[in-house]
Length: 191
Image 1: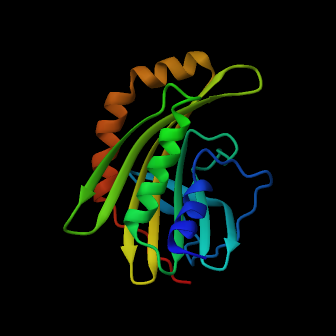
Image 2: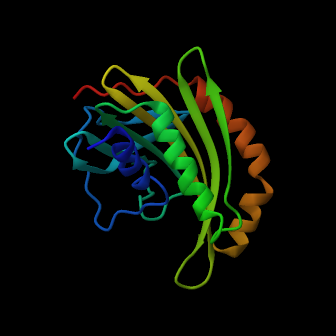
């Protein structure tokens, strides 16, 4: 599998996914909880779609990966893949999404000193009742000796009234959470 194709698989599985059946096998040696900004996130779902790709999702107690307000994601892709490949493919997916989702918006932040790239993006969808689901994400891509690590923060609002309130407070939420998230230590997979 080529690096670009691996990166595309890695990223295609990250955007607005909701697992059909919750499972939580610790493929990365990160059983949790993961602490961020005074909140504890427990391992709630995981997947290992290929030998070189693992994904784990963490939510606060009382939330689920199918219906969450806050989530952390940790993903690892090993092999001949670079951060630039991962970010380019994710941006291409977001650009394509703009045609069907007018709320899609993104910004890229790069840290040349660490090689990290952060993708700050907003997407939306409608549920089966025609109500909006709004999702804001910070995807922090970091190079590793064996490939790329993604540490991500996701926030959601469900229903038109909640979506409107969420969008109204997004500027403040983004400012507060971005600083905290970028200063947080990256998870260190042990497996």
